[in-house]
Structures are given as structure tokens and as C-alpha cells.
Amino acid sequence: MKIARLIFNPLQENTYVVWDDTLQAAIIDAGNMSERENNVLEKFIADNGLTPVVAINTHGHFDHLLGVAHVCERYGAEFALSSKDEFLLKNAVTSAELFGVRSGAMPEKIDVDLDGRESITFGDTTLQIISTPGHTPGHVALYEPQSKVLFTGDTLFRESIGRTDLPGGDYSWIMRSIIDKLLPLGDEVKIYPGHGEESNIGHESMYNPFIVEVLNDEINYRN
Image (cartoon, rainbow, N blue to C red):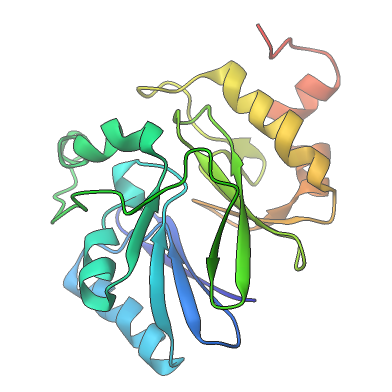
């Protein structure tokens, strides 16, 4: 499995292009919002001979949705998102305006509901779907066990975690997601977050202050 990171929009969101030897590709969290950014994405896809078949979203915040409609229209890709975040999708344009971002078209419907789904496949690649609520109710992480790669969206960042003060956010749940579901995957698992640089589970277990204070029993994250 091959991975490319493209950084788009004013919130510096990480859009990932993921593909394998079949040259079928998934676009994870398409955040491209302008003609220039659309051209950057399209050039990368064309230069590598890729065929995007699915636009997968870890969650429904607007900065991760800005390019989804373009990807789906341009390539005929399906849109995958948890229906638990559908309320965010419906309010994405308004949310963008509140952050001073002028958005274009947003996807009108979810083609593939990730809620309760165990995996999603493109080409010869299968991504396991891990429910990670907390940043949003329907947030998911995407895990490829053979390469030990984990796309964490806005749940887990390098030495930080996602915000829980936005609608649908919950600190207890995001920490349950991280401690109970992501850390057990193993120290060697490499994480690709929705913003910022790559990391791995081992590094976060040692240096992420939100995780360390829980592991040291300095805070009860369950209450």
C-alpha cells in the first residue's frame, strides 16, 4: 500500500491518497477547496495513473469534506462516512462560514455508511474500520494491519488529541477510543493524522501528554 499526503485549505488539513498495485485508490478526508488545490490533487492522480474509487471520511467536519464533492463528481467515486456524523455533513457549509471559510459544493448524501461496518475495500487493499467517537459521534479510524498503518483523523495527533468542545464532542469518549482501541494495536503502528505530522503509537504512549496523564493515573478519563 502506498500513501501520499497533500495539505489543503486554511486549516492545513491532511488529505491522503492511498493506493496499491491495482492502481485503484481511496482519497481519505478530501480537503481540497480551490481550483488550484483541485488541480494539485488531479495532477498527482494523473501522474501516478490512479483511479479513485472511494472518498472515505474519518468524520464529518467541513475541513475534511471540502473536496469530497469534487472527487466524487470528477472520478465517479463513492462517498463513505458514518451516518452518525450526517448532522455535521448537513451543516458543513454553515460551519465553514463560522470559521471564515467559503466552501463550495458539499456531498449531498452518503453512499457507504461506515457506522457498524467492519471494513472497506479498494483494489487489493482492505482497511479495517475502528469506531473512535469523541471528536465527533461517528468518527472512525482506518487501519491496514499488514503495513501497520493507521489513519486517525482528528482523534489522535502527534503529541495531542482532537478537540472535544465542538458539537458532538466528548472528552471521555475520545480518551476511551485512544486508550481502549488504538493503543492496543501496538507501538510499531504508524499513525497518519488529520492535521500535522506522522507519528506512531509507541511515541504517543511516551510523549503525548493527554495519554501519559491517563496511563499515570493522574486523571480518570472514564468519568
